[in-house]
Structures are given as structure tokens and as C-alpha cells.
Length: 395
Image (cartoon, rainbow, N blue to C red; front, side, top):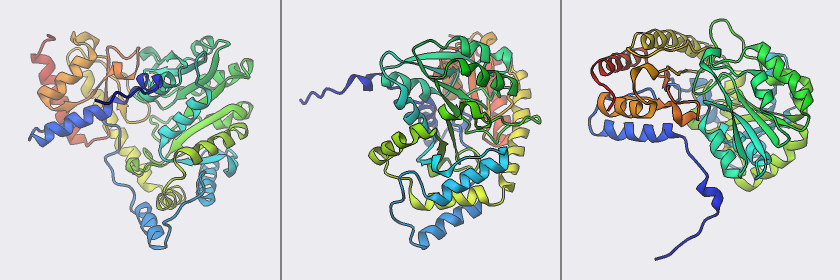
């Protein structure tokens, strides 16, 4: 029997449990169970037709080969135009990187700064890959609490107080996954100002949900702060805004001092993003945005439905999420621990959710629901959850 020894770093790598829940929900559905999946975070809308057609045209036009590792220039220029149009910021297309999905930007940023002895700050509850990749590099993950009483926004004062001489990178995410929290502009201002005292600390701003904000709020991009642009990495992409999760394409903006490092990582790791998808990305950014507006309006309607429904459940309370398409209700008064509750809801009622601890040490007492599902399915799920919590006590 062969015995293989792998490097210790792979013993520290985690995963995203939403995919495990998706696999279990799919298996139950294959057995004939009626499953309502509020676990996976992807829009239930099709990619806009003009975007699909752009990819088909690119294929028919012979766009079948390699592209530059950083992405084709017309796409990088389209990203720069989009940022200028929406936020009034100037971005050099030669600092834009086209990557195969948002996670690649996380991976690259954390690999650049993570090593034994380093500390990396990340949001908690937060996207689980942050902590997984930090631990993979050997760096020490330092959670920055996203507290319910603050609407799951981070506190700049609390974050800045966690910086030590070992801090190499700070990760922030607004609108946030899993909470739907949106950090107010004044907290972003305080963070940018406070970082002046820490010139050797880099910042990665995950803005993948930037067009999914509600209640009249406007997203505040970190690119609007020239004083930190020389150490700022911005993560974004097409997946959530244009319902393109399966196309696997994201973009990022890098400081000039880091760009060449990431270009070389691209050459070594993924070569380039597939060519036709890049032409689809141009069509998405430069074409009509009415599909984005319709999707956002529908998410807003579902957001109100899910928040009202959750607050009517026994032992459950939910702040109103201000962005993304997630609710993060407090289930502490139900008597259930979060992960056993999420498991029981799936196995016994056919409702897929994610237990809060899958998103960090501050996630106990909460579960995540994605309202990227139809209003009818959300209503069915809430009814099943209510019946379950009324009849079933924790074991």
C-alpha cells in the first residue's frame, strides 16, 4: 500500500460548507424529496441574453485561443469605464486583472502576504475561504467581529485596534456574506483615515455585492480613497451582479507595486481566463443594465418577505439585511445550536440553510438563508421552518 506524505499546509486548508449542503440537498432531491434550497448563494436568474450572445459570437468569430494572462485589454478598459461611470474614480486598465472567479483574487492577495509569523485580519462572520486560505499560508487569522447590534457592519475603531506590528493584510467585505450587512460610509471614512498610522498594512476590499444594496444606500468603494490606493486590492466580478456564477470570471484592481507579482502567479497557475467569457464580460459591463435593476428590485422584494417571515418564527429574530441576498437570523432563543438546527431543517423539512459557525467563530447562534430563490419557495420554506420550530425541540 502506497503511503504518500503531503505538505502540512494542506492539513490546514478548509472549505466552503455551502457546497457540502448543496451536495446533500441534491442527493435528497434525487431520492424524490421536495427540497427548497436557501443555502447556496447564487442568483436564480439567467445570464442576460445579450451577454450570452456575446460569448456565442466570440466563439463563432474564432476566439478559441490563449489571451494575455491579465485579461484582454478591451475587457480591462471596460472595467475601468464601469468604475468611472458608477463611482467617478479613475482606474488604469493596466492595473486591472481578469481572473477565473472572485476566489482567485482572495487566493492571490492572501498568498502575497500570508506566512508564518504574519497576521491577517478578516471579517467574522465572513466568507469562509478568507480564514481557510489564511491558515493555509501559515499566517494567523485575526477575526474582526461583525456584530448584530451594528447591523453586521464592522466598526472601524474595533478593526484598527486589532492591528499589531505583525499585521500584513486586512480583508473587509461590504455588502457582506453571510450577513447582508452594509458598512456605513462614515465607518469606511474612519478606516481610511486610521490606516494612515499603519503604512505597511495592505487592504483587500471584497466588493462583489456592490450593486446589491437597498433602502436608498449607496455602495462606498475603497477606490474612492486616493490615500490608500497604493496598498489597496479591490475584488469584484460578474457572478452576482449579472447572474454569471458558472462563467467563472472576476476582476480585481491592484496597486502598481503588486501587479507584476500577480501577473506571474497567473502565468504559473491559470494562464488566462477563457476567451469567449471575456467578450461576454465586455457586453455585460457596456451593455444595457436593465436586467441588473430588475434582479435587484426582485431581491429587495424577497428581502422584505424573508425578514418579515423570519421575525414571525418562534425563537427567531432577524435584522433587516441592507445588501447582498442573505439574511442571518438569530436563532439563539429556539434552544437549538446553529449547525444541528440547519441539519435538522434540511433532513426533516427539506429546507437547506447554512449554520452560522461555518462562517466563523462569531457565527454561533445564527443561520444563513439565501433569498436568491423565488418568493414562492421562500414562503414555502418559512412555513416549513415555522411548523418545525413549533413542534420540534432540540435533542
